[in-house]
Length: 225
Image (cartoon, rainbow, N blue to C red; front, side, top):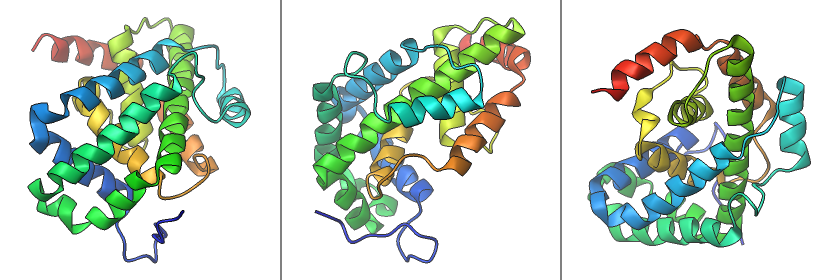
């Protein structure tokens, strides 16, 4: 089953970023009604980041993604992934009228979510990408002698993963990360295949250019607010 929707630059449909923003808008307006899905997604994210392993360089990062494109069942089981996907579909259906921005593109977003098998693949692949990226970032921090706590590692990983060309956004330190990733992976389920080589290069470039001691100090200030 396909949605008949293209995300090519020539398409009249929304970009991945716009779909992600639309899902974030719905998520924020829905508030506590999304708490169950929010918990499941953030729990899966925590497990993916915690299950990091040695990824010493960009080549190892690419090999890890090629060798295992989806998150391992021992990290996040398929039932949890299915819970996230079905929960997102149900919540979006219930709350899509809360945001004119989201409603305008609801056919694209709903189309992504109802294709269950593709949505599950997108979530599983996305969690694996986060796991591998977190592993690479943790290795670089260790090489520089910078000790990142798990919350900071998760925040930096999500920020780079979502917007590798932008400055790190500490807004992703809490449940906002789940909303943004949900939007990203919903958009990804409209297409097939892993992250492009150019996107992987952008992740690596972003991580390699992080000023970790400065970000660590900024994190301390943000965390006490």
